[in-house]
Length: 458
Image 1 (cartoon, rainbow, N blue to C red):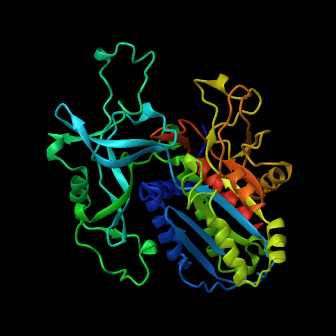
Image 2: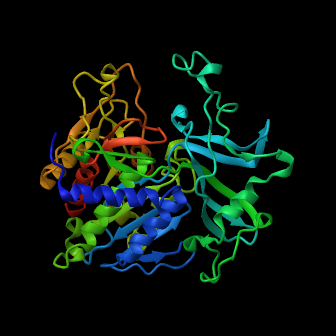
Image 3: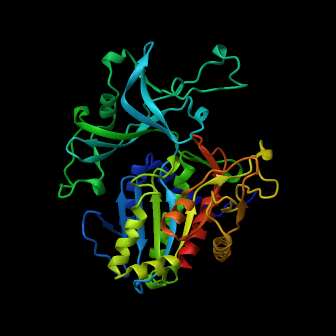
């Protein structure tokens, strides 16, 4: 057992607050916006003209994605970018149209599987609905219900094989219950409206020229034109175990990396009055890009395969007077760190991991490597990441999949292909990836943030 530094504990407490405030990608973006505004960053609206100046700090939102950046005072048309890329979404279940279902005296919610959740981990948990609703007048609002639903497991008396071979049909067995009664007399959206009460506006997503101070007093189901709502585990994050060395939480994939990247950007650009903006990133423009929809392939308006980051970098370059030639030079000198969680060696299943490369919880961030470019890491990127870890005094590890177990992928290869910027894939080792509740070491998110801060400070 090892002693956990006080700073690592404080970082874990702040991560817990970030996760709790971020039940959906839209809530995560609202929390990013809140923290950026508190640090003095200026909000940019995509439909407005941008006044981006050297020495300024800005952020912009597109649905469930956000990009924040700090421009050095010395920035010019060919200034490169140092980018930390993450994602805001997590696997789970999304509410379908005509969501009120049920039978046999129970009211149920029609949900569709989002991404690749570990289905059994969602059983027998108190869940809430969270996300955004869009009213017929076009205004968008954040909502969360608190505990409302539960996906009940089948008693072992009715399935004696449950401990040997549990199989869940994604349509039949994952529809949560939310009440008692007859379906013909019930309305899940009415129950949602009753739960959320007054609405919270998504200010950055309001239609132009609307009064941001105007709030509907209550949500009327008849006014709902559309919604993006997901089921969320309501159990809060917890620090526990010997020496409080373990951290369990929903949505570590990938709010852990998003929190680390944002914290690193704020630390690198606002923490020390003695550090001028021109010194940040060794003169590079520091960027955090938190995308949506990574868990379903990133191919969306707000995903890494979409144009969001390219649009922001193009407008930023134009504000600095960049030509096509200047942009190519800036991108050639840029560097992107794609950060997502990875697999720690599971003590109950050590045979599922590569026999030589075996990252452990508490051992520091992982450098993710794959010969088939499922991760974007190459030797140049690896060396730069390792140098940053050394500069930050942070231990580092490598992750590579066992040859018999194909690995997943990240926004790294997508972003490298989309932009032509050298990219490295990193992360933090966890257990129970894609579970409703995942596990990491308290110290590793802090290690990741310190390494990211070193990257931004060059």
